[in-house]
Length: 181
Ligand SMILES: [Zn+2]
Image (cartoon, rainbow, N blue to C red):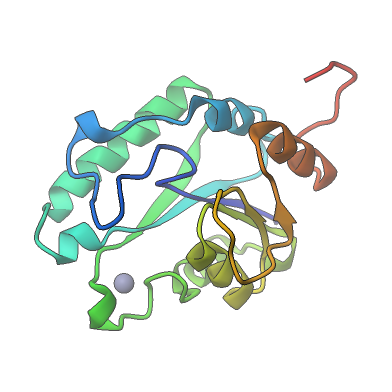
């Protein structure tokens, strides 16, 4: 079975400025244009979120607070008819050198083990070079939706929501219709 894997910050909601972390619900600012596209994903394809949340390791928020924020995000997505199977967070510090922090592939590999996902057929959507490297390390396809120039080649580069929609149709994650979108 193939899956779609989403990064959280920069894909579902806006990123905080560099070196800042979302630690409160009020800081969650949804990227509704992307969410609109994810609501069109075929319902039989499982969706996962993987996210680096070093703010926990830095002591800027508790794991419990992160879980609360994640749950609220899942609730919001459900209200848009998007059902996330599971969200995986790495809460370690970069300096911990854990096995799960992106660009290491462990969170994606765990999804594959836990849900018997065929990664070669799956796509990871991310907005950073770290995400694209992570997809490559896990040997799954990638869609880069970030704005800055990156040094690794994603499978696809979607420069705007329209292109993202097109790629997801090409890859058959979204039903092609005769409607203009
Ligand atoms: Zn980790």
